[in-house]
Length: 223
Image (cartoon, rainbow, N blue to C red; front, side, top):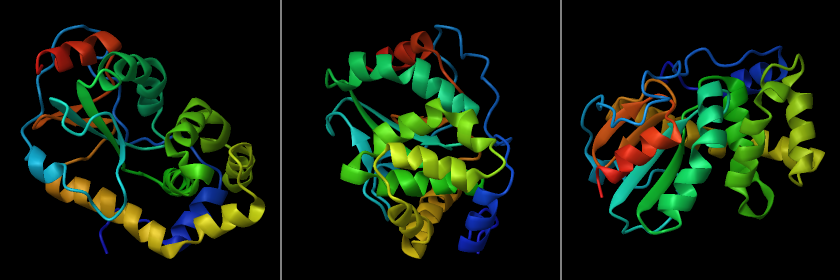
């Protein structure tokens, strides 16, 4: 078993116990507020990275777009939440919706609550993964730091259409748990992912939160 693998026992115990925001997500990067093209943290085989894993890709945009981005994120990472709220909407409007960027979200949970939130996103009614993810990230402190995480997540899940029964069924789905662990393991072992958010962009790796100006400058440099 990989050292970071989350088991059903640790999932259920950790989701319920008093929590804290994940400490392993990256601090805001030095380029978070700049508009300069950042230096990459290395190269990756993008063709290999784009190969699907055990779960369907959560993807947006045209698959043949000139710029391809894979974001590895954790649901309990404040910097992922900041990026999703303050940067991603503009990137979606200006680049994804215009056919310039193909964008993939991939799970990289650091702790049981992040794993539980990703599992619920995969189980979200009507395939509403991204809206559920947006809701959980925007309300991060409501559930990620709650004394009773299970109760807090159930309350959030009910807003998305879950019942008590569907909530429990999702969080006890061993196959789904194994598959998300596999996504994370592959990211760590094959592409060197160790912190969130990390972006694989046209064969380059970038770690840390980015402002709209910085991410836009980076995408523009590849068009």
